[in-house]
Length: 186
Image (tube, rainbow, N blue to C red; front, side, top):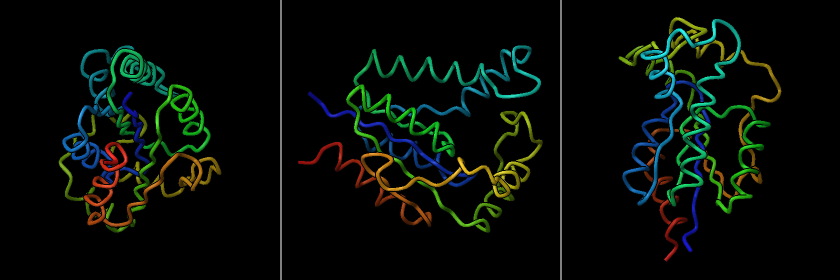
């Protein structure tokens, strides 16, 4: 029986989570990227009247959860969950669920410096249609930098079976190779 992986990305806007997830998907056989930004864009495009005006985007979370549960229960794919996953409590709850299903868990924390994030945002052509509570990605980053909620914290050893921290974009490829080796140790 194949050892299935669940890889969760953690990080601020423009830290490289999506780029990493897509690159990993190309190298990790039988894997699928599940990205909430895609779900937000889909909902904004086709179901804008269903989007909440205030509060959490429950429809986006429900759509993501449906896709994740389908992948868990109806496929044998490795899962690459490409979200910010910045809440330790929410991460722990999700990881517990995957562990119960027999997955090996991997957290990839993108701890990229603020000046790199600001440079990336300034050069970005990324659509802001996915944003609900901010008008720009600069606003998102400012809010993320100011978060003082104690639950919004970086992952620590022991939270998942494996933890990788990426401090610089040059480290991405080596982390991908290490994850592929975990999936295929021989």
